[in-house]
Image (cartoon, rainbow, N blue to C red; front, side, top):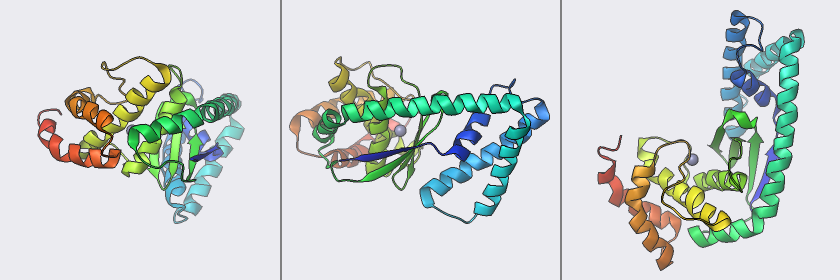
Length: 254
Ligand SMILES: [Zn+2]
């Protein structure tokens, strides 16, 4: 079983709330810039902490956290705003937990079938939840994921989580030019193949996530069809082959 531990980390949520805050919540422009700067650092430091459990900058982090909490105490409007963010994130946690557990058994079978990898290996992942309007889903490395993304279609939470779990299999922490092929394969596996197995329907047109990788997916598609039928390689072998074969396609894509 892939065990997901859903966590609301309040300092991180608070920092993120300030960053997504519409301008009118915080009293004046100066305060706004000040709080944003603190929040920006807290968010980055917190992610670093989630991933590496590093305590190098822990002291600095704690003092920034205190400043942010202090600002929250002094500003009733900001406090109400944060309270609302917290409650909505708690609802989000309930929804995402319920969808993940009700879909787990059938979706893990589908993922084992698509990727030919072992998923039922009792690995535990920490999933840090932030407000869904943040529109963020990222794999931080070290079995830690950040998700704050709203649902548009059926089973979207399940698909987003499997997308980030695929990042862990590919050891893919961020999307850069050299990772476009791997990322396109992740999107083919989750946003496209898994989605069509869960919800029905077909592709192309591709369901793309945040980037426009449809051009690469289109190039990979013929090999992808063969991969799905042949049941010879697993997804890691397929990815390696595509990395070699697709190099020429990247020229002129970006
Ligand atoms: Zn991704």
